[in-house]
Length: 414
Image 1 (cartoon, rainbow, N blue to C red):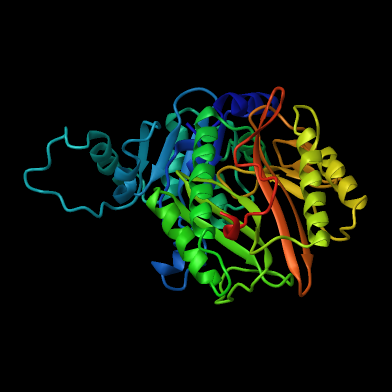
Image 2: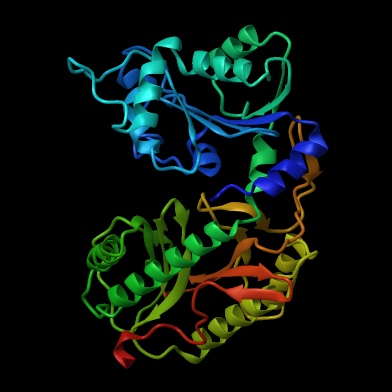
């Protein structure tokens, strides 16, 4: 299970909430494990010409008491048949032709029941409203992602629930997701393993004249073969920037930034290293050593109770004491998004604020957060260096999820 139910209930108690309602793909996945490749892609105008470019709407419900529920179209109910969430609510006219006589009820019974019940609700808003009334939540305090809920959907819910309080919980849900469940940690660990193996195989092909496209294709094939989805494969070009779509060919003696990641069962990996086609010069080696020391300093701060700004400050202090003028050391959480909370940067004075939460954005680290630390150095026209590693925060410190590399990756030295 991805959703940290105990943490969610603690936050709900603090905010006096009776239920949480997810309306974005990432939080619907968090609440229920439901995923569909169309969710981030499909827009209303694609099926209703002239309509806005909004995502097709679904919902997931997590009540303070009672069972969670998922609101989907009848055709997609079968995609949710094996989820841990048992309460499937469908909406809209059925798009499946019935046989005569009808299919036996024992054939996908939950799906068939949800499809039969879909006639009760013409729209996802109708289905959610009916669900909330049936659960006795029509006059409750309901946290919902108002940050990304289109105005017309929000108005429909307000019209249908005149006694309810609809409160924005967009930041609250990000805060809940910052601490991982055991299931999410294992998915993140597996994603990192798949990504590292694919990157190792890909970069073994690197050499003078080899193109970025060839290395990227090999990485894509590796993650796909392991059952993961490609996310990114980026490389530094001559120290002047980062590219993902180029036929650039590697030069003899090049040293370059490489950043790569995949997604396995909805959870992201994100790692980075320095690829060197030969030994580094003394100057570049000094810069690499400074980046290594920078990451090490950040790791020492990855302890429960320390804040992201403290880790960033320790990293920046190392860079300030080195010959590297520009490195932008920082870090970020990792999970159902390629960047979750916490974010490891200087304290910007902002707050995680919505109708249900109001705390400093400079979050303290907690046990079972997963955090990346990264630092890079770009020398225009010469080289780019990079280190990015993932860590699971435990009570005694940080546990690496991805390999710790003391030196750049050198295919010519294998």
